[in-house]
Image (spheres, each protein chain N blue to C red):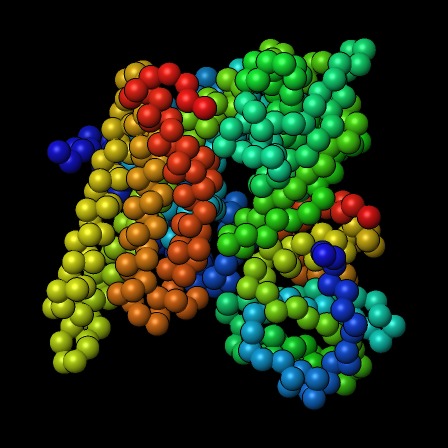
Length: 113
Length: 388
């Protein structure tokens, strides 16, 4: 089982977001070229879970196109940390927006393979 | 007979209770229900407060700069410090500091300089690496990580699992087999820097506890200098065993603290929630749940304090600590379960901390030695002998 979130990206559009239910989980936002710009989670305080949080992401883009992929996961906190660590392991640094927002120490992960 | 606190203990406990309710709980209202950390600025501010209270560095011996607090008082404090959402696994978000790894107090002077003092100053973090994929309850037999002497170094190979904090740690205490023929007499304890080549955190192990995850570690040709042996070669089992025994009382006290808070919530709620025209508190089925909760809490609390008092008197407390761990974790689980039942649908939501405690409390029956091993420890002491 891959520990990376590697399902295909979809366009961040109202139609695609509407297919999601209000479940908790993690997501990645990417630029049209596939560069991941943010790794987020829809947690216990989110209104309407992934559906609501991704709608907010869409609003914040102000019409700029973007891609997203998600994973429904009740262990969203540890999964979110894992995805951040994997991103650093793969790309050497956090996604741009996470770099600005992060104020806690991040662990180091060196996955095999 | 209930434990009678001294005047000094009462002052400390009142101070800690006020601190939890006025400083910790309000912060949690703004955090995710599964959060395991507070904002670093809040953390620094609260650490200053606990220092001013004279309560920072609990468990650190006075000769290393800690406050001189006995085990009984620390147990009473642990009951209080757990009474918030993250309290079971991160009581008060560690703003009271901690003893670090007590095994380091017995380290060499050079090891203390490199590892112990930076931990006490809050500059370095550490992990404790005992459990392996082959098991954790019986470390004497389960440890398969091997350490082979090569010149003046030891070369380690193996794997560890369910290790908390290894991904963020600067170093760790890691157990490896140095003599395959000797069982518990063939285990050695090593101090490992996490930037040493051959040490890798391979994955996060996701469990019911989302906030403070565990990790899996691989150790491949990890070269460790002789001066990083903690204690003596082939005498590491005693270090592991000592840690497991010490940990049982505060571990149990945390379960009791959460149970006390869940009971407080259940009592409050059953008085205001009405069904069929009367408060839940008037229903015998609810009354019995409240009573059963209280019996569980008082029994577990009593044995925690008995274990702590024996430890303070310098007597053997292994049986009592095992009993406290067994009772605290099992009774705590029952109390949280009943409190959820009394709260009905709300009890299952993330609006209340009961849902998180329910998940995390389940782990407590397994972590730090499952209930079955605690019974084994007690049976050994009561009947004698070493069982296989």
